[in-house]
Amino acid sequence: MNHSLYLLGLCVKANALVSGDQILPAVRSNKAHLVIITHDASDRTRKQFKDKCAFYHIDVIESFSSFELSKAIGKTSRVACAVTHAALAKQIKEALKEVKE
Image (tube, rainbow, N blue to C red):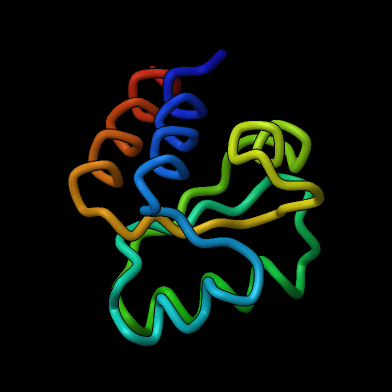
């Protein structure tokens, strides 16, 4: 398993991850530190999250498939999630950066 997917599972255990209808309120209230969108999310969903995160200066990463993300966080049919813990968000960004290099 990818280390960043493991960290997403850890975020769930630490109650530091939101998904579904809770993402946009977390972004608006500046509780989200990182938003992850899957590759297979719809164009409308991708645009909605990117625009909202750009307005509130929150990092957005497009990675994984919806199957991988859903399995990592233990929920079904998820195409996006938001990490609400700053240190865990930083670790996930670093882990994804290492994978790309």
